Amino acid sequence: MTPVQRLRIAVSSQGGCQVVDVGGEVDMSTCAQLSAALERGREPGVPLVADLADVEFFDASGLRVLLAANDGGPRWGSPLRVVPSRAVYRVIEVAGARHLLAVFPNRLRALEGGPDRSEPSGERGSGRLAPAERRARGQRHGVAPVRPGGESGGA
Image (tube, rainbow, N blue to C red; front, side, top):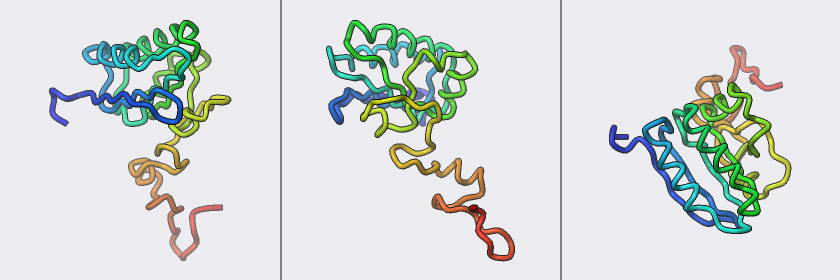
């Protein structure tokens, strides 16, 4: 990613929801773009999903944008549904804002609605870990590592 393109945003309709798909870095210099995209994605009575699963950096300015978009939810008839990456989830947790947002583990769950979940998944819609997380845990292709002696790492 070039320094100029630090944030990627796409707005689309999917599964009866408006989805704002975000990747890259959300900070003080890019949060206005996120705010504008969330506003563009709003339609009366249609749930809005902020899919931040591909966000690599996220700070308090991004959290402020999410909270403001969520506060506007009642006027649109639906709260904001957030699909966080680990970086986004960490900021939400550290700020003590978990109870203020509808957080879902992946896009599929957010599109379905229902009770929100607090832990993000590593990979959208599958419940499997993303490649970087698998490497960090010593896994390949979502399968438990093999221990010396041929035993699998799973229980």
